[in-house]
Image 1 (spheres, chains in turn purple, yellow):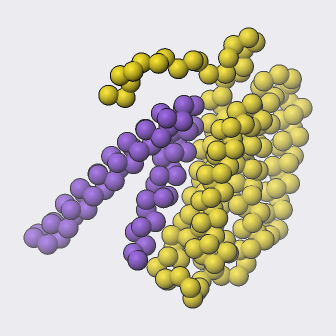
Image 2: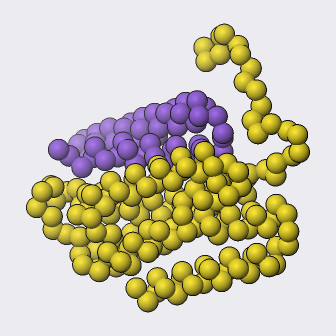
Length: 58
Length: 163
């Protein structure tokens, strides 16, 4: 199994802690953490694809 | 281990000083809570009355740290393993103490987990300490309780919420 699997729990923990420091409502914390996790993962995935194609064709 | 003892002693002295210097009232409690949050993650919030949040923070960080320890063979990050990750553990008194107690032998290698898991294990231990610094600072976000005011406002029950 690739060690990349460990990206998910640690990123979720970081997002939850950052949100829990700002808010008190558990629902809001969960919602905002997941949203931030999704955005961060999306940006990383997108940039990885860009880097992949840059390396392949340029 | 000597450095761990020095830092622990310095933190204790700072706690005692803040007790004297900050005077009475919420400012004093906040100062003590800030330093206590370094020793035990979540302790600061618990001391300021937000014990549920403190317990949640402690559980989250303890789970992350335990997972990191499991990945690295129940040994913390020694200076030889990775100096940067080792310093990251200083963000919390508990991780620093455990690092001093368990960190001397190198964590690597371990037979029952893939070798590529070793670095994430060290990272988990380091991130626990760093996240505790954020939790410590968030102690200053806790507002002083007002007499007769409930801790949290009543939720507004709107059926279309979240749409």
